Image 1 (cartoon, rainbow, N blue to C red):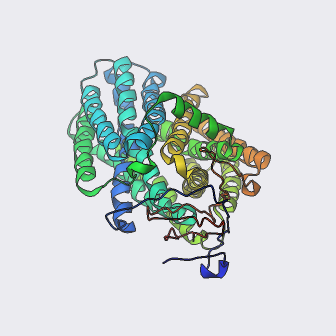
Image 2 (cartoon, rainbow, N blue to C red):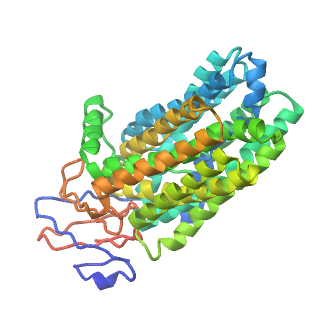
Image 3 (cartoon, helix red, strand yellow):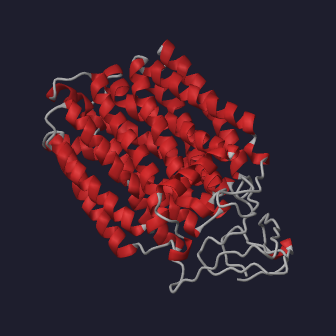
Length: 474
């Protein structure tokens, strides 16, 4: 549906802003030969792709004690193989994100998935924990392609509240991975060794490559691509880092996920060694935590109908800090046993379920002209902080209090960052490419179409208006 002029009542239920441009600034024109893909199909395809990262991280968690024994290593050294995976995910996104802005989304996605397949096979034959750590880093690098490009595709097609809604659905689809992954790893351990887990990851990579080849078409037209040069990429990163609100939102997204990584890195040792759970019992309890995360992400869709993403993030971080404080109490006093441990953990993970979809949507809504690079910086921050969190839990004792302190600290730092920058009131006028745009951080307003349809800015400087659902404007 097309809207002209500045009448805000033309967009039911959307707080759309009216933005004017001088006659000398022409909006980019984009044409598509194909109609936009259905949202449901994109959620399913992108959900399957982004699930590769969590699957790669989580599927071997029940095997950590077995890997420690088989490779004659220590708990801390084996935890560094998880750190290697997260470092690979972070670095991979920094590299692959800008490549996807230059080459399109499909080619880097296919290449990254191929790297993941090869790395999985190398992990399978690793003779030592040091080699396993290196090959896990390479595995994470390949999996980064699916995650960063999926986020960029969301920004290609959707914006604002629509993007936050799609990301909430992706969390639902992606949430199947952490629920199923430890159980799959436990099943493999019942039938064989931990090396079979990595053979299964190679097979999963092959299947996801076929999904991308068959069901995913290119979403970045050639006229919106950037030159594949190092200096412009570095300049873009610099421009992104000068946007204070973007940096704060990226930090909040990373710190929100730090609670999840603290749980991932320490849960197998706390629940199996500390509380005496078996491999299958651990997989079941771990899955309950994933259900809490998924359930909250779907309630987030309903919350977005009444509240801005920025407000939801703030309230969720407060709830995370309170729940983390309760977890510190229950773990230090050992009150309630495993139940006393899991109840506040579930509350922390549920809070993360509100932070994880909204923070990326807020950050990416500010820089649609460099979605791949912005998504790369976002993902690198998330997994880079995760790479720091994993060994931190081990250094603090690899027990319940260590997890609790790490979770609570991340929430408190995120709240402090929001209070300092107040990104919900910041409305920058300049974006990376220097064009005059005005994008509120809550994602409610935009002037860039997200479905790839053609747009045209009137040369007389009259206002154009884009509804938040991403429908075309002219």
